Image 1 (cartoon, rainbow, N blue to C red):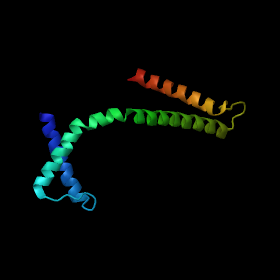
Image 2 (cartoon, rainbow, N blue to C red; image 1 turned 90 degrees about the vertical axis):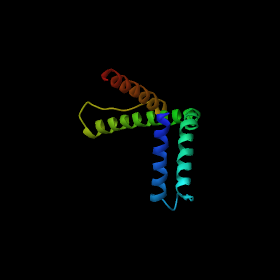
Image 3 (cartoon, rainbow, N blue to C red; image 1 turned 135 degrees about the vertical axis):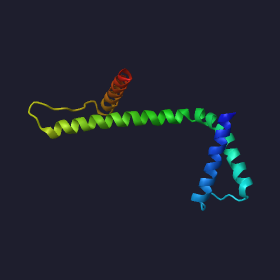
Image 4 (cartoon, helix red, strand yellow; image 1 turned 120 degrees about the horizontal axis):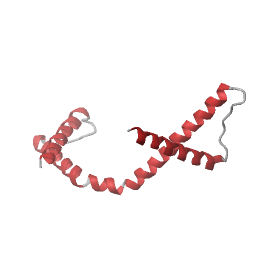
Length: 122
């Protein structure tokens, strides 16, 4: 119950913040009653509905996370190739073969390796 009261206070504060900071966006009329009622409704929705929406949106979040995972690791591979090429050291070179599948595979395993290192060092 104390958590809900805290949510109610925070959401009431947010309503006041929105009303004072963004008066052209947040159009609320009705004085203190409207502020209290809106804060209560937001607190109730954040308590009951938002967790359900998080579960329902999990596939989208997972998909976006996977894309970011591959892009970050592919970018680090690309930077490694670029640095090795820029150094122009005799007898040393780095390249990624196999086209898209090669980049995808290597970025996956690079990410897994980085994850294992972070998990072990914790």
